[in-house]
Length: 426
Ligand SMILES: Cc1cc2nc3c(=O)[nH]c(=O)nc-3n(C[C@H](O)[C@H](O)[C@H](O)COP(=O)(O)OP(=O)(O)OC[C@H]3O[C@@H](n4cnc5c(N)ncnc54)[C@H](O)[C@@H]3O)c2cc1C
Image 1: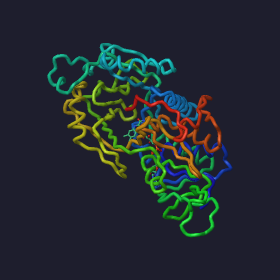
Image 2: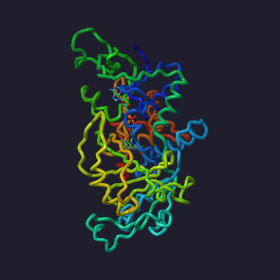
Image 3: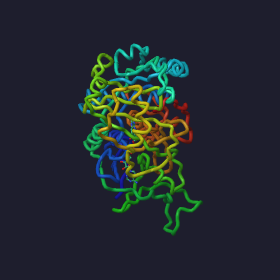
Image 4: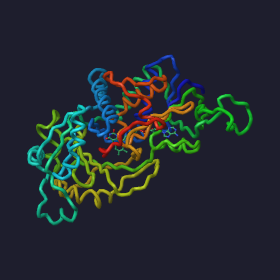
Protein backbone atom coordinates (compact mmCIF):
# COMPACT_ATOMS: atom_id res chain seq x y z
CA UNK A 1 0.00 0.00 0.00
CA UNK A 2 1.12 3.58 -0.64
CA UNK A 3 -0.11 6.70 1.11
CA UNK A 4 0.75 10.36 1.60
CA UNK A 5 0.71 10.11 5.39
CA UNK A 6 0.85 7.01 7.56
CA UNK A 7 0.10 7.32 11.27
CA UNK A 8 1.18 4.49 13.51
CA UNK A 9 -0.84 4.36 16.75
CA UNK A 10 -4.56 4.83 17.41
CA UNK A 11 -4.14 6.37 20.85
CA UNK A 12 -5.12 9.95 21.58
CA UNK A 13 -1.98 11.43 20.00
CA UNK A 14 -2.14 9.41 16.79
CA UNK A 15 -5.89 9.88 16.35
CA UNK A 16 -5.92 13.64 16.99
CA UNK A 17 -2.91 14.08 14.66
CA UNK A 18 -4.69 12.06 11.97
CA UNK A 19 -7.72 14.31 12.29
CA UNK A 20 -5.82 17.59 11.92
CA UNK A 21 -3.65 16.34 9.04
CA UNK A 22 -6.68 15.14 7.10
CA UNK A 23 -8.75 18.21 7.97
CA UNK A 24 -6.05 20.55 6.70
CA UNK A 25 -5.94 18.86 3.29
CA UNK A 26 -8.73 16.35 2.69
CA UNK A 27 -7.21 15.47 -0.71
CA UNK A 28 -4.29 13.76 1.05
CA UNK A 29 -4.47 10.03 1.62
CA UNK A 30 -4.06 9.60 5.38
CA UNK A 31 -3.91 6.04 6.72
CA UNK A 32 -3.78 5.12 10.41
CA UNK A 33 -2.78 1.68 11.69
CA UNK A 34 -2.75 0.11 15.15
CA UNK A 35 -1.59 -3.28 16.33
CA UNK A 36 -4.66 -3.62 18.60
CA UNK A 37 -8.26 -4.11 17.59
CA UNK A 38 -9.72 -0.66 18.16
CA UNK A 39 -9.06 2.94 19.20
CA UNK A 40 -7.58 3.84 22.61
CA UNK A 41 -6.64 0.26 23.48
CA UNK A 42 -3.11 1.27 24.55
CA UNK A 43 -2.57 3.71 27.41
CA UNK A 44 -5.14 6.32 26.37
CA UNK A 45 -8.03 4.06 27.35
CA UNK A 46 -6.35 3.26 30.67
CA UNK A 47 -5.87 6.85 31.68
CA UNK A 48 -7.69 8.62 34.46
CA UNK A 49 -8.94 11.23 32.00
CA UNK A 50 -8.09 14.04 34.36
CA UNK A 51 -7.10 17.44 33.03
CA UNK A 52 -5.67 20.63 34.48
CA UNK A 53 -4.12 23.86 33.33
CA UNK A 54 -1.93 24.09 36.43
CA UNK A 55 1.63 23.58 35.18
CA UNK A 56 4.79 25.41 36.19
CA UNK A 57 6.18 25.41 32.63
CA UNK A 58 4.73 27.99 30.26
CA UNK A 59 4.62 25.58 27.32
CA UNK A 60 2.73 22.97 29.32
CA UNK A 61 0.28 25.61 30.49
CA UNK A 62 -0.43 26.69 26.92
CA UNK A 63 -0.71 23.12 25.61
CA UNK A 64 -3.16 22.14 28.34
CA UNK A 65 -5.12 25.38 28.60
CA UNK A 66 -5.88 25.53 24.87
CA UNK A 67 -6.71 21.81 24.79
CA UNK A 68 -9.20 22.27 27.65
CA UNK A 69 -10.90 25.06 25.68
CA UNK A 70 -11.08 22.63 22.75
CA UNK A 71 -12.68 19.95 24.97
CA UNK A 72 -15.51 22.38 25.70
CA UNK A 73 -15.86 23.10 21.99
CA UNK A 74 -15.88 19.38 21.20
CA UNK A 75 -18.63 18.69 23.71
CA UNK A 76 -20.69 21.85 23.73
CA UNK A 77 -20.52 22.94 20.08
CA UNK A 78 -19.63 19.81 18.10
CA UNK A 79 -21.89 17.60 20.18
CA UNK A 80 -19.48 14.83 21.21
CA UNK A 81 -20.34 13.51 24.65
CA UNK A 82 -16.84 13.20 26.10
CA UNK A 83 -18.25 13.35 29.66
CA UNK A 84 -16.54 16.61 30.42
CA UNK A 85 -16.80 17.43 34.10
CA UNK A 86 -15.12 20.60 35.31
CA UNK A 87 -14.88 19.38 38.89
CA UNK A 88 -11.55 21.02 39.82
CA UNK A 89 -8.26 19.87 41.33
CA UNK A 90 -7.21 20.56 44.92
CA UNK A 91 -3.57 20.36 45.89
CA UNK A 92 -3.43 19.85 49.64
CA UNK A 93 -0.38 21.28 51.41
CA UNK A 94 1.08 21.69 54.86
CA UNK A 95 2.18 25.25 55.67
CA UNK A 96 5.78 24.30 54.97
CA UNK A 97 4.99 22.58 51.64
CA UNK A 98 2.92 25.54 50.55
CA UNK A 99 5.71 28.03 51.23
CA UNK A 100 8.04 25.88 49.06
CA UNK A 101 5.52 25.94 46.20
CA UNK A 102 4.14 29.47 46.70
CA UNK A 103 6.19 31.12 43.95
CA UNK A 104 5.24 28.48 41.35
CA UNK A 105 1.57 28.85 42.29
CA UNK A 106 1.80 32.63 41.97
CA UNK A 107 3.49 32.29 38.56
CA UNK A 108 0.74 29.93 37.33
CA UNK A 109 -1.96 32.28 38.57
CA UNK A 110 -0.33 35.33 36.94
CA UNK A 111 -0.21 33.44 33.67
CA UNK A 112 -3.97 32.99 33.75
CA UNK A 113 -4.67 29.74 35.59
CA UNK A 114 -7.55 30.53 37.91
CA UNK A 115 -6.87 29.30 41.45
CA UNK A 116 -8.61 29.67 44.80
CA UNK A 117 -6.90 29.29 48.16
CA UNK A 118 -8.64 27.52 51.02
CA UNK A 119 -7.51 27.01 54.59
CA UNK A 120 -7.39 23.47 55.97
CA UNK A 121 -10.52 24.24 58.03
CA UNK A 122 -12.42 25.46 54.96
CA UNK A 123 -11.45 22.32 53.05
CA UNK A 124 -12.69 20.23 55.94
CA UNK A 125 -16.04 21.97 55.78
CA UNK A 126 -16.38 20.89 52.16
CA UNK A 127 -14.91 17.42 52.73
CA UNK A 128 -15.82 16.44 56.32
CA UNK A 129 -14.25 12.97 55.87
CA UNK A 130 -10.79 14.48 55.45
CA UNK A 131 -8.49 14.48 58.49
CA UNK A 132 -6.35 17.62 58.51
CA UNK A 133 -4.56 17.59 61.86
CA UNK A 134 -2.06 14.88 62.89
CA UNK A 135 -0.53 16.42 65.97
CA UNK A 136 0.00 13.80 68.68
CA UNK A 137 -0.97 10.93 66.39
CA UNK A 138 1.64 8.20 66.82
CA UNK A 139 0.93 6.25 63.62
CA UNK A 140 0.90 9.40 61.53
CA UNK A 141 4.26 10.35 62.99
CA UNK A 142 5.74 7.01 61.90
CA UNK A 143 4.29 7.55 58.43
CA UNK A 144 5.65 11.11 58.38
CA UNK A 145 2.27 12.60 57.54
CA UNK A 146 1.88 16.33 57.02
CA UNK A 147 -1.04 18.38 58.31
CA UNK A 148 -3.37 19.88 55.75
CA UNK A 149 -3.11 23.64 56.23
CA UNK A 150 -3.85 24.94 52.74
CA UNK A 151 -5.65 23.77 49.62
CA UNK A 152 -5.01 25.27 46.20
CA UNK A 153 -8.05 24.74 44.02
CA UNK A 154 -7.62 24.83 40.24
CA UNK A 155 -10.88 25.95 38.68
CA UNK A 156 -10.29 25.04 35.00
CA UNK A 157 -9.48 21.45 35.81
CA UNK A 158 -11.53 18.29 35.77
CA UNK A 159 -12.15 14.97 34.19
CA UNK A 160 -13.40 13.40 30.97
CA UNK A 161 -13.83 10.02 29.31
CA UNK A 162 -10.56 9.46 27.43
CA UNK A 163 -11.98 6.59 25.42
CA UNK A 164 -14.88 8.75 24.22
CA UNK A 165 -12.43 11.52 23.36
CA UNK A 166 -10.34 9.25 21.12
CA UNK A 167 -13.52 7.94 19.48
CA UNK A 168 -14.69 11.50 18.82
CA UNK A 169 -11.47 12.31 16.94
CA UNK A 170 -11.81 8.96 15.16
CA UNK A 171 -15.36 9.81 14.01
CA UNK A 172 -14.17 13.17 12.66
CA UNK A 173 -11.19 11.58 10.90
CA UNK A 174 -13.39 8.94 9.25
CA UNK A 175 -15.99 11.56 8.30
CA UNK A 176 -13.27 13.39 6.37
CA UNK A 177 -12.35 10.20 4.51
CA UNK A 178 -9.45 8.95 6.64
CA UNK A 179 -8.60 5.25 6.52
CA UNK A 180 -7.97 3.06 9.58
CA UNK A 181 -6.58 -0.47 9.80
CA UNK A 182 -6.70 -2.11 13.21
CA UNK A 183 -4.93 -5.39 14.01
CA UNK A 184 -2.02 -4.14 11.92
CA UNK A 185 1.34 -3.98 13.64
CA UNK A 186 4.28 -1.99 12.28
CA UNK A 187 7.12 -4.45 12.78
CA UNK A 188 9.82 -2.15 11.47
CA UNK A 189 10.40 1.39 10.22
CA UNK A 190 11.68 1.23 6.66
CA UNK A 191 14.96 3.12 6.65
CA UNK A 192 15.76 3.49 2.97
CA UNK A 193 17.79 5.64 0.57
CA UNK A 194 15.97 8.61 -0.95
CA UNK A 195 17.21 7.42 -4.35
CA UNK A 196 17.57 3.65 -4.15
CA UNK A 197 20.09 1.99 -6.44
CA UNK A 198 18.78 -1.52 -5.87
CA UNK A 199 22.03 -2.68 -4.19
CA UNK A 200 21.74 -5.00 -1.12
CA UNK A 201 22.34 -3.36 2.30
CA UNK A 202 21.32 0.13 1.25
CA UNK A 203 21.38 2.83 2.60
CA UNK A 204 25.14 3.45 2.68
CA UNK A 205 26.75 6.36 4.51
CA UNK A 206 27.11 8.28 1.28
CA UNK A 207 23.42 8.05 0.48
CA UNK A 208 20.70 10.38 1.73
CA UNK A 209 18.20 8.26 3.61
CA UNK A 210 14.72 8.59 5.05
CA UNK A 211 11.92 6.65 6.71
CA UNK A 212 9.87 5.38 3.79
CA UNK A 213 7.05 3.71 5.73
CA UNK A 214 6.72 0.51 7.73
CA UNK A 215 6.72 -3.23 7.39
CA UNK A 216 3.64 -5.06 8.60
CA UNK A 217 2.79 -8.77 8.50
CA UNK A 218 0.26 -7.83 5.78
CA UNK A 219 2.94 -6.17 3.63
CA UNK A 220 4.83 -2.90 3.35
CA UNK A 221 3.08 0.44 3.71
CA UNK A 222 5.01 3.13 1.87
CA UNK A 223 4.41 6.71 2.95
CA UNK A 224 5.72 10.16 2.11
CA UNK A 225 5.55 10.90 5.83
CA UNK A 226 5.23 8.42 8.69
CA UNK A 227 3.89 9.80 11.97
CA UNK A 228 5.04 7.62 14.86
CA UNK A 229 2.51 7.94 17.70
CA UNK A 230 3.09 4.61 19.40
CA UNK A 231 3.26 5.98 22.97
CA UNK A 232 5.31 3.83 25.33
CA UNK A 233 6.15 1.48 22.45
CA UNK A 234 7.97 4.19 20.46
CA UNK A 235 11.43 2.89 21.32
CA UNK A 236 10.57 -0.53 19.86
CA UNK A 237 10.41 1.12 16.44
CA UNK A 238 13.06 3.78 16.94
CA UNK A 239 15.80 1.86 18.76
CA UNK A 240 16.56 -0.41 15.76
CA UNK A 241 17.29 2.67 13.63
CA UNK A 242 19.35 4.38 16.35
CA UNK A 243 16.95 7.27 16.96
CA UNK A 244 16.52 8.39 20.58
CA UNK A 245 12.86 9.17 21.30
CA UNK A 246 13.53 10.50 24.83
CA UNK A 247 10.78 8.46 26.42
CA UNK A 248 10.91 5.75 29.08
CA UNK A 249 7.85 3.68 30.06
CA UNK A 250 6.93 3.39 33.74
CA UNK A 251 4.02 1.50 35.25
CA UNK A 252 1.10 3.44 36.73
CA UNK A 253 -1.92 1.84 38.44
CA UNK A 254 -5.43 3.00 39.16
CA UNK A 255 -7.87 1.62 41.73
CA UNK A 256 -11.63 2.18 41.59
CA UNK A 257 -13.87 2.07 44.69
CA UNK A 258 -17.60 1.76 44.94
CA UNK A 259 -18.65 1.37 48.53
CA UNK A 260 -21.47 2.90 50.59
CA UNK A 261 -18.89 4.01 53.19
CA UNK A 262 -17.50 6.44 50.59
CA UNK A 263 -20.82 8.02 49.62
CA UNK A 264 -20.32 11.16 51.68
CA UNK A 265 -16.78 11.60 50.32
CA UNK A 266 -17.98 11.22 46.74
CA UNK A 267 -20.59 13.95 47.00
CA UNK A 268 -18.96 17.25 47.84
CA UNK A 269 -21.43 20.13 47.95
CA UNK A 270 -20.57 23.59 46.71
CA UNK A 271 -17.05 23.27 45.30
CA UNK A 272 -18.09 22.56 41.72
CA UNK A 273 -21.27 22.48 39.69
CA UNK A 274 -21.47 18.68 39.71
CA UNK A 275 -21.20 18.54 43.52
CA UNK A 276 -18.66 15.76 43.22
CA UNK A 277 -15.27 15.16 44.81
CA UNK A 278 -12.68 17.12 42.82
CA UNK A 279 -9.34 15.52 42.12
CA UNK A 280 -7.53 15.88 45.44
CA UNK A 281 -3.79 15.40 45.88
CA UNK A 282 -2.81 14.39 49.39
CA UNK A 283 0.27 16.01 50.92
CA UNK A 284 2.03 12.66 51.32
CA UNK A 285 3.15 9.79 49.08
CA UNK A 286 1.81 11.21 45.79
CA UNK A 287 -1.66 9.76 46.39
CA UNK A 288 -4.48 11.38 44.43
CA UNK A 289 -8.17 10.57 44.06
CA UNK A 290 -11.22 11.89 42.27
CA UNK A 291 -14.95 11.30 42.12
CA UNK A 292 -15.88 9.64 38.84
CA UNK A 293 -19.29 11.04 38.01
CA UNK A 294 -20.18 8.57 35.28
CA UNK A 295 -20.11 5.54 37.55
CA UNK A 296 -20.44 7.13 41.01
CA UNK A 297 -17.13 5.70 42.11
CA UNK A 298 -13.82 7.00 43.39
CA UNK A 299 -10.66 6.50 41.34
CA UNK A 300 -7.31 6.56 43.06
CA UNK A 301 -3.74 6.65 41.77
CA UNK A 302 -0.29 7.20 43.19
CA UNK A 303 2.60 9.18 41.74
CA UNK A 304 5.13 7.13 43.65
CA UNK A 305 8.87 7.64 43.88
CA UNK A 306 9.50 3.97 44.62
CA UNK A 307 12.36 3.44 42.23
CA UNK A 308 10.13 1.42 39.95
CA UNK A 309 11.96 0.17 36.87
CA UNK A 310 11.48 1.50 33.36
CA UNK A 311 9.82 -1.27 31.43
CA UNK A 312 7.64 -1.63 28.34
CA UNK A 313 5.03 -4.29 29.04
CA UNK A 314 2.25 -5.24 26.67
CA UNK A 315 -0.21 -6.05 29.39
CA UNK A 316 0.82 -4.58 32.75
CA UNK A 317 -1.21 -5.82 35.71
CA UNK A 318 -2.27 -3.97 38.88
CA UNK A 319 -0.69 -5.19 42.11
CA UNK A 320 -2.98 -5.87 45.04
CA UNK A 321 -0.18 -5.44 47.56
CA UNK A 322 0.74 -2.06 46.06
CA UNK A 323 -2.60 -0.82 47.35
CA UNK A 324 -2.57 -2.69 50.67
CA UNK A 325 1.09 -2.20 51.62
CA UNK A 326 1.84 1.20 50.16
CA UNK A 327 -1.22 3.33 49.61
CA UNK A 328 -3.70 2.09 52.19
CA UNK A 329 -1.80 3.08 55.36
CA UNK A 330 -1.48 6.70 54.32
CA UNK A 331 -4.92 6.89 52.74
CA UNK A 332 -6.78 5.67 55.77
CA UNK A 333 -5.11 8.27 57.97
CA UNK A 334 -6.20 11.16 55.78
CA UNK A 335 -9.53 9.56 54.92
CA UNK A 336 -10.65 7.14 57.68
CA UNK A 337 -13.77 6.35 55.61
CA UNK A 338 -11.47 4.01 53.62
CA UNK A 339 -11.07 1.77 56.69
CA UNK A 340 -11.23 -1.83 55.41
CA UNK A 341 -12.52 -0.67 52.01
CA UNK A 342 -11.10 -2.68 49.12
CA UNK A 343 -10.91 -1.59 45.48
CA UNK A 344 -13.69 -2.96 43.34
CA UNK A 345 -11.62 -2.69 40.21
CA UNK A 346 -8.00 -1.97 39.30
CA UNK A 347 -5.94 -1.66 36.17
CA UNK A 348 -2.43 -0.69 35.12
CA UNK A 349 -0.85 1.07 32.19
CA UNK A 350 2.35 2.89 31.52
CA UNK A 351 3.41 6.51 31.70
CA UNK A 352 5.55 7.67 28.78
CA UNK A 353 8.09 9.70 30.71
CA UNK A 354 10.52 12.27 29.41
CA UNK A 355 12.68 12.57 32.54
CA UNK A 356 14.55 15.60 31.30
CA UNK A 357 11.84 18.27 31.34
CA UNK A 358 8.60 16.21 31.73
CA UNK A 359 7.12 17.83 28.62
CA UNK A 360 6.02 16.15 25.36
CA UNK A 361 8.11 15.95 22.21
CA UNK A 362 7.07 16.66 18.63
CA UNK A 363 10.05 16.17 16.37
CA UNK A 364 10.68 15.53 12.71
CA UNK A 365 13.34 13.55 10.91
CA UNK A 366 13.73 12.57 7.27
CA UNK A 367 10.39 11.11 6.24
CA UNK A 368 8.90 10.97 9.73
CA UNK A 369 7.35 12.91 12.60
CA UNK A 370 7.49 11.64 16.17
CA UNK A 371 4.89 12.69 18.75
CA UNK A 372 5.13 11.34 22.28
CA UNK A 373 6.90 11.45 25.64
CA UNK A 374 3.84 13.13 27.07
CA UNK A 375 4.85 12.24 30.64
CA UNK A 376 1.46 11.19 31.91
CA UNK A 377 -0.40 14.14 30.43
CA UNK A 378 -1.07 13.18 26.81
CA UNK A 379 -4.84 13.34 27.14
CA UNK A 380 -4.97 16.86 28.51
CA UNK A 381 -2.53 18.26 25.90
CA UNK A 382 -3.65 16.22 22.90
CA UNK A 383 -5.35 18.85 20.81
CA UNK A 384 -2.46 21.31 20.98
CA UNK A 385 0.11 18.58 20.24
CA UNK A 386 -1.84 17.36 17.22
CA UNK A 387 -2.01 20.91 15.85
CA UNK A 388 1.77 21.13 16.27
CA UNK A 389 2.12 17.95 14.18
CA UNK A 390 -0.10 19.55 11.54
CA UNK A 391 2.04 22.72 11.49
CA UNK A 392 5.27 20.71 11.34
CA UNK A 393 4.01 18.67 8.40
CA UNK A 394 3.06 21.89 6.61
CA UNK A 395 6.47 23.44 7.36
CA UNK A 396 5.03 26.25 9.44
CA UNK A 397 6.99 28.02 12.14
CA UNK A 398 4.03 28.45 14.47
CA UNK A 399 1.12 26.15 15.24
CA UNK A 400 -2.28 27.73 15.64
CA UNK A 401 -3.71 26.29 18.85
CA UNK A 402 -7.42 26.39 19.63
CA UNK A 403 -8.49 29.94 20.49
CA UNK A 404 -5.99 31.41 18.02
CA UNK A 405 -3.01 30.98 20.32
CA UNK A 406 0.40 30.55 18.73
CA UNK A 407 3.04 27.98 19.65
CA UNK A 408 6.52 27.95 18.13
CA UNK A 409 6.85 24.45 16.69
CA UNK A 410 10.61 24.12 17.12
CA UNK A 411 10.36 24.88 20.88
CA UNK A 412 8.98 21.39 21.54
CA UNK A 413 11.38 19.57 19.20
CA UNK A 414 14.39 17.64 20.45
CA UNK A 415 16.95 19.45 18.28
CA UNK A 416 15.99 23.06 19.04
CA UNK A 417 14.15 22.56 22.30
CA UNK A 418 13.23 25.63 24.39
CA UNK A 419 11.19 24.27 27.25
CA UNK A 420 11.23 25.01 30.99
CA UNK A 421 11.50 21.96 33.21
CA UNK A 422 8.08 21.00 34.55
CA UNK A 423 7.90 20.50 38.30
CA UNK A 424 4.18 19.86 38.77
CA UNK A 425 3.87 16.25 37.61
CA UNK A 426 1.55 13.71 39.20
C1 LIG B 1 -2.88 4.75 34.65
C2 LIG B 1 -2.70 5.98 33.80
C3 LIG B 1 -3.35 7.15 34.13
C4 LIG B 1 -3.21 8.28 33.32
N1 LIG B 1 -3.93 9.41 33.64
C5 LIG B 1 -3.87 10.48 32.81
C6 LIG B 1 -4.65 11.62 33.06
O1 LIG B 1 -5.41 11.67 34.02
N2 LIG B 1 -4.58 12.67 32.21
C7 LIG B 1 -3.74 12.65 31.11
O2 LIG B 1 -3.69 13.65 30.38
N3 LIG B 1 -2.97 11.58 30.86
C8 LIG B 1 -3.01 10.51 31.68
N4 LIG B 1 -2.24 9.41 31.43
C9 LIG B 1 -1.29 9.47 30.32
C10 LIG B 1 -1.99 9.28 29.00
O3 LIG B 1 -2.78 8.10 29.05
C11 LIG B 1 -0.93 9.18 27.90
O4 LIG B 1 -0.08 10.32 27.94
C12 LIG B 1 -1.59 9.11 26.54
O5 LIG B 1 -2.55 8.08 26.51
C13 LIG B 1 -0.54 8.87 25.46
O6 LIG B 1 -1.22 8.74 24.24
P1 LIG B 1 -0.50 8.05 23.03
O7 LIG B 1 -1.43 8.17 21.87
O8 LIG B 1 0.88 8.59 22.89
O9 LIG B 1 -0.29 6.52 23.48
P2 LIG B 1 -1.28 5.27 23.50
O10 LIG B 1 -2.65 5.63 23.88
O11 LIG B 1 -0.62 4.21 24.29
O12 LIG B 1 -1.35 4.85 21.97
C14 LIG B 1 -0.27 4.23 21.30
C15 LIG B 1 -0.88 3.25 20.34
O13 LIG B 1 0.15 2.75 19.50
C16 LIG B 1 -0.13 1.37 19.23
N5 LIG B 1 1.12 0.74 18.84
C17 LIG B 1 2.26 0.63 19.56
N6 LIG B 1 3.23 0.04 18.84
C18 LIG B 1 2.69 -0.23 17.62
C19 LIG B 1 3.21 -0.82 16.45
N7 LIG B 1 4.46 -1.22 16.38
N8 LIG B 1 2.37 -0.93 15.38
C20 LIG B 1 1.08 -0.50 15.42
N9 LIG B 1 0.54 0.06 16.54
C21 LIG B 1 1.35 0.22 17.61
C22 LIG B 1 -0.68 0.85 20.55
O14 LIG B 1 -1.44 -0.29 20.36
C23 LIG B 1 -1.49 2.04 21.02
O15 LIG B 1 -2.85 1.92 20.64
C24 LIG B 1 -2.37 8.25 32.19
C25 LIG B 1 -1.69 7.07 31.86
C26 LIG B 1 -1.87 5.95 32.65
C27 LIG B 1 -1.15 4.69 32.27
